[in-house]
Image (tube, rainbow, N blue to C red; front, side):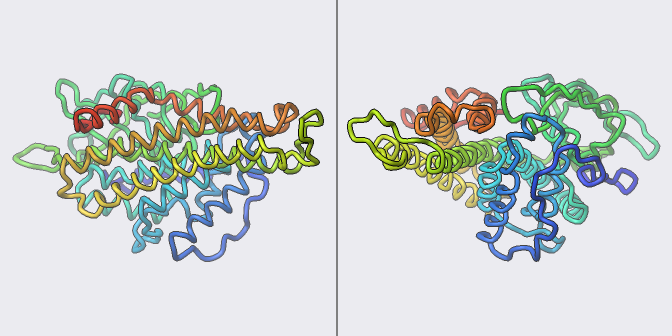
Length: 433
């Protein structure tokens, strides 16, 4: 799973042109934080910069090279990397709060960062100890930004085993209609099946190579800066030592399974949860600022007020939406606690522990979607008709949650929780649970 020196990943986000740029990129972030709270505060600072022109950048639709550079310069990219290699050595609880904070400023960049954290963790999820050590050192020292082309709704990439200069090589070929990170990533996680077998292989490969071609066809309602379009994979070559979790045995290579391998889906579902919560936070904050500063009180009410934020229905709506958001955040924190308990003994986590975490994550995701969509809609009722102007940009929040929450049908998450409530049935690992 490690990248050999001749295949070292280029720094795409720092070397590529920056057609889009946050308005107030900090020249000097200062020393890295030393506490979890400090990292979350740094994420809020980055979100504040991103929020300044989030709507304009969303509408321009340029590849977010500058935004990824901001994430690198702030140190957020190496948040989960071990401190011995220069990372922050933080927990997933901190990472999820960071995703939430960044998403409040720009949902697209929050998604990119959340997916990056998952794929940067891929070695720990699937790899051998030697692979984990090699990948995490290189990723931290070179500040890799991770992307992924592992859309399970498409056919798997087909892997053929071919003879290379230094022995057998795994060669990936195929097409994925969705990916994340695309051109702005330094490395891409690929997944495929060895032809004629049922053996799945994950590998981390350099993004900038002729065998990977991005279609540039992401043109959707929301999450427009996530580089989420299709990708053609035609001849990406890796050695067996780069096949995550495979070890040489009896003249061949075998995968070493464990329950922790299946945590990739619950973790990304929890990333989704915090993405939605962050976007909802951004919607409420933006709307509240508009209500206080611009919205006019209704002059024909039975009890006319001087200011819109003195009106009862405005206060009641903000109170209701805030309470629902706080409740959703609390459930997300509960889910993160379960994930931390699992991470504390990853080598011997049980199927029951995995299932209990998955069902709470499913519950947190559905509540976050419900709260986020309601907030994205109802903020217009307390900001007024003029707030629907394109220049205001309140639409970005609903568009982003509506788009991404269709990733997999929320009805199935409700049913997972329902089966647990009715029959104590825990979700079994699939590509979506």
